[in-house]
Length: 88
Image (cartoon, rainbow, N blue to C red; front, side):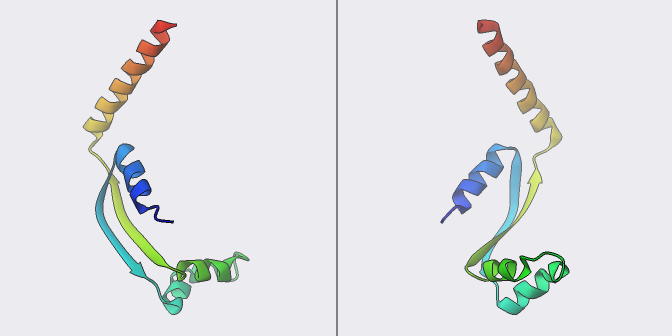
């Protein structure tokens, strides 16, 4: 569905930094091994494995921006909210 761009945009606009990204295709054996903790635990285990190896996977390492930037953004958002409330 080509959602990677939308996901990246959403992450970045919400204060995350993508520090690593890789796209790859997972073989069935690797998907089964990755999800093996769910085997016998969730009834959808086989479907999860099928989905994981049905197309490309995008793995990301994400983190928050430094706290000071988030605080500044929160203050700005709070000021905007007060401006809207003050108009009514």
